[in-house]
Image 1 (cartoon, rainbow, N blue to C red):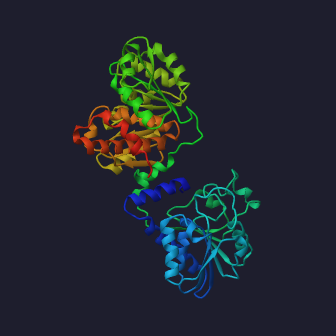
Image 2: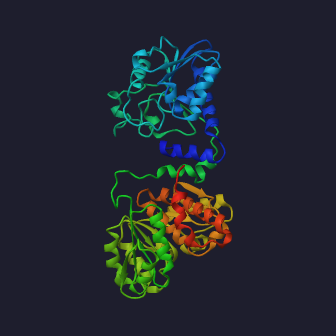
Image 3: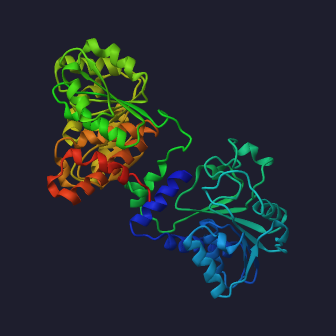
Length: 487
């Protein structure tokens, strides 16, 4: 099963791997044509109801593969309103190939006759809202017809994830009152969508040539999960507390700066008062809370917990050191904390033995993973299996850094290939922790980790292009915003 949101990401990742969307559309249209041939003999009348997006584009392709049928592509809207280049090209190809077409600018002009098969390609998995005209009328005519109705990817008016009507929060039981296409058969692509099981329709899952790597590896499609409400206010895009410093001052500042560049609205740093001025000096944007002493210890738990309660995510570990009192602080804090936290550096060693209600993203390199009690391997697939198993054991999301990074929550696994050998320089892990922290404020931990390691690697690659192996960690934060663009 795959969600519609994840499917959009996989499509984009496939394109980034060199499988053009136009090629996928060709395969999708061919699969739709095969379904039509399975239910009707050559010469049968086929009416294709085509939307103005890529779902309609699939039907344009299908019409070309149905040359032995009396097939007509009905475009619901004007040709100039077709929304994508590849759909437009396939619409124009129908004219050049003399495939019968009709343009429906007004619902009153739509007439299907008495076709043997109706192909519903009006709206795809990304559609939202209740059906409007002319799609509403087209759905009614399809439902009133005696034709076999074949839906492309998902019946129009149905949410592919829930099986309920689009434009509401209802489930499959609400379909009776909502306008939608009542399909007899559905051709969906690459993987089944969860909501389709609730429908009384025969389901075909068509392999359209999306490589497994598009789903297994991070890619630009994953960035589709990012976005910011134009009406949002300060703080609604994430508030992050970085807890670190003492032996080191640069580490917490790197994490904090990265959190800002990754989109957090507010970033605070809790650190020993002896280094607070130095940490503040790295950026005027930071809010720094100095805690008594030169190391964090058990006496600081209550104050840090108070600060954490006012933030969405805690980034715990950058520059803390491994002093016994500091490790006792980490243990007691996590034991009492029930929010989200990204755990890095020396704080990682505490995680396997602490009983916590917190939701954690742990970001070890392979040596730190072994120190936590996990296992590693040279082969990426074997390492991925080991990370998944250990994530399931500890009950937290793991982001294991390496030449190929591995992210798992104990169930899903994602690999990442961005980044370069120059990123072995100290501090890049602190940038990663801050980046994941900002994303974990607005996304689930697994996606935050997968996207975070992807964009951190892209920022590192941009820095390497400018500086070669002489890049330093401070080169990365300012390159994060460009790395996070989904264009």
